[in-house]
Image (tube, rainbow over all chains, first blue to last red; front, side, top):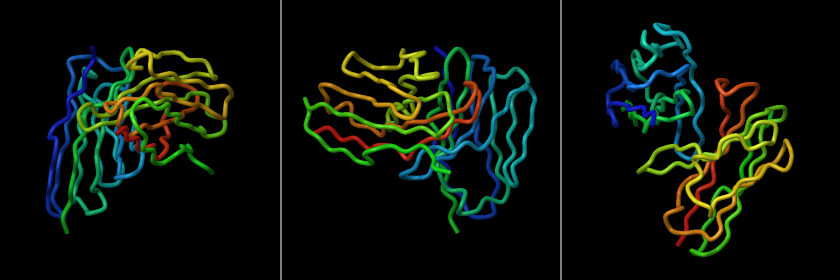
Length: 108
Length: 114
């Protein structure tokens, strides 16, 4: 069974701080996606990474796919209260699996 | 453009009752997914369809769960009989041309079985 482990499970930081969320597996994934979910809503796709070693930037968010396509990270620079939410990684191997998520709270 | 539409938003019913959740995917999308989200298990893929045909239902927990997609614009997830452990938020998502493509999620149905 392919599993994605996310860490940390919960992160509470002050506005302006930097943070990194990790998504790790022992399995290889053909692609990996990051989603953000707010209370009462469905997840919204942030990015898809496909190539090992790939780095994608989305304003203050930087996503990296590991060289072996088994892990990924999400780095947020100068976090803002609007970044608060549940961050989920999802990978396609022989089926789609989601990590348990990282709850991020950014305090102003 | 309208996103994925799910109904109802909330459902509270007694155990043993039949529950039907509904989903209207984004027009033109050829993949439809049903998920269940709980605190304990996170987001789980239950079943997905391609061009209205069920492709992988290995995530469906038991025979009490069934899903149909009679046409490209409508799908249902049915639980009969329902049990308290089925309480969760159920999401429907759709995507276009490929499993690796972005999935667009509805706002979910919060189901409580008493």
